[in-house]
Structures are given as C-alpha cells and as structure tokens.
Image (cartoon, rainbow, N blue to C red; front, side, top):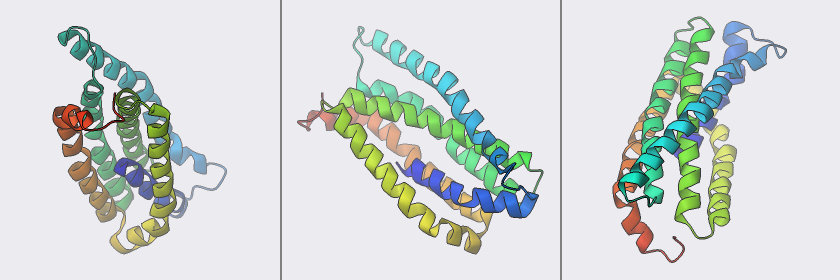
Length: 199
C-alpha cells in the first residue's frame, strides 16, 4: 500500500513540473504520463508472465500444490524497480535534464509499481476465503492514501526539492517495500494459519 502512497506523492508534482520546467501546455501535457503508461503496459505483459512462471515453478516443486506465498517472489522482483524509478525521476527533474529523462524514470517506476501490484492482488485472492472483501479493504486503503498524500505532497517537494523529496520516497520504498515481502514469503503461511479468514 505504501507504494501507492509514493505513486500519489510523485503524481503531485507532474503537472506543475512539466509545465514550469519544459513549458508543456495542456494540449501536450499528457505526454508526461507516457512513461508511466509504457511502464504499466510492460509490467502487465512481462511482469505478469514472469509472476505466473515463478508460481508454476514453485508449485511444481511443492508436488503441484500452490500457496499464496508463491506469488511473493514476483513482488520482491518488482519492488527493486520502484526506488530506482523514483530516484531517476527525482534527480533528473532536479537537474532539469532533457524532458525525456524524467519520463524514463517514471516509466521504470511504473513498471515496478505494476509488477508489485499484480502479485499483491493475487496474493489477497489466494490467501483469504472472502477475497472480494480483502480486495475491497485494500482498495479502500489505497483510496484513502490517494486522498491524503496529495494534500501535503506539493508542500513537501517545495520545501525539499524534487531530488531530495524523491530520495525520501525512494528510501521509504526500500525500507518498507523490500524487507516486508521477504518476511511475508518466509512467515506468511504461519501468520495465515492463525486467522479464521485465511484459506
């Protein structure tokens, strides 16, 4: 969920940054979202296929029985791209490099974000008896983050700058986004065994 928060904070700067730095007018302003779109598309093609392959391989090693935790390695893989993309975007924006550089950074971020989002959704479906309720709870939390984070995002970047501000976000993505999935991979089954709602 924290990665969605990073996503919303990053989005808080897009329109103003590309307009003020590169003169993107409303007509061509949509180009600044091109990197995210390409990153999302690449993740749904490559990331989904890779996640399915990892799940099938781990299931085969477990006598053909799949477990929700077998979705997590794809999540771990994707979580490394998020801080790379955020740092790329932030510091190329701070340095006011060619407009393509921040867009490439946002594309790397988009790839990482969607490569982590898909396994999380599948994990929730596999792990809980009432998967629709689990997905609804996750969606509600994402929506709350989408409302709250932009309220202070622009002020944060105004104070810190795009480079240091995105470095802070990348640090959060590393601290929260990499160790937690590894912990879930190794301890998730025992945690699920204590819940009456898990499958």
